[in-house]
Image 1 (tube, rainbow, N blue to C red):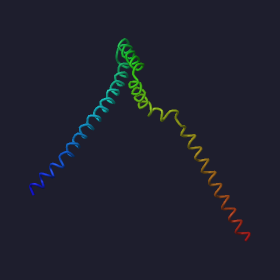
Image 2 (cartoon, rainbow, N blue to C red):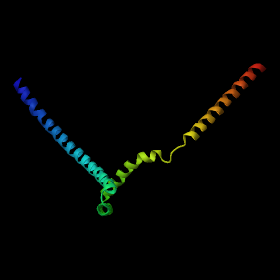
Image 3 (cartoon, one colour):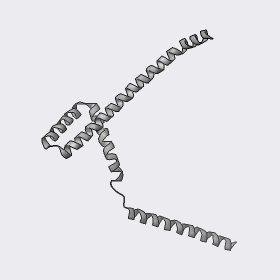
Length: 132
């Protein structure tokens, strides 16, 4: 039985080692992606904070640095567009706003037309029964 266990360990060990390597690589990749995303979120927050609270010269310098980086780096351009799209997407969901009064009026009109159609159909069915 001991020889079987030893041979089993010898066969299983490379698979366990490979699985451990896959887990490590996965952790490194996921961590890098999360850090990349978090850095751009932090940068976006810093830009908003600088615009709201810092002196004008600091804000202009920060925005100029961002504009230069935006012009030279495709990755930064993609990340900036993604960040601002995610920031403004909830706003664009409600803009331009729909008029709830007009929606309710339209719904009532559709219901009235539907009821009139049903009543006309029932009346035609009743007339057809009376003729027979």
